[in-house]
Image (cartoon, rainbow, N blue to C red; front, side):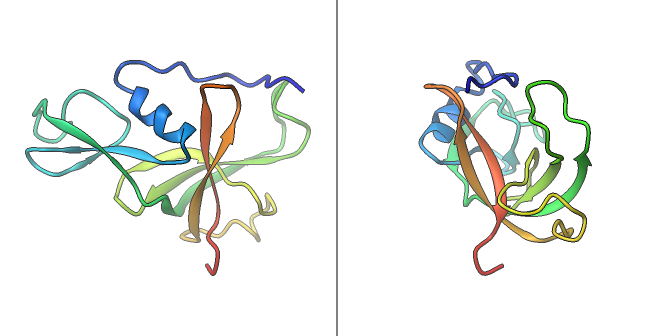
Length: 137
């Protein structure tokens, strides 16, 4: 079955992130001047304004910060409810993703639960980072 959801289009600023995701790595940036961790990717530091930023591979560990369960998915998103979540990465930034490999219920999705990144290939070029309950968590 063809992938029907929107497909991200990499930009020069996000290419490293998407290349990492294709390799199964969660790539972030760090400001070379003030060391703040940056997400989403950009060519400058949002804290100090310095234009010297470097990419690095994050741990892939996170905690569930917030979520909503969508019970009425739009066309192409399947028939089952799914969690749209904000996860807080171990390195500090928060990002929006989906929680997979567990029931999509409030009983299963507890705030601050430990998560780990997994990657869903959707095209030859793009894999989406998603999160599942961490092993042993």
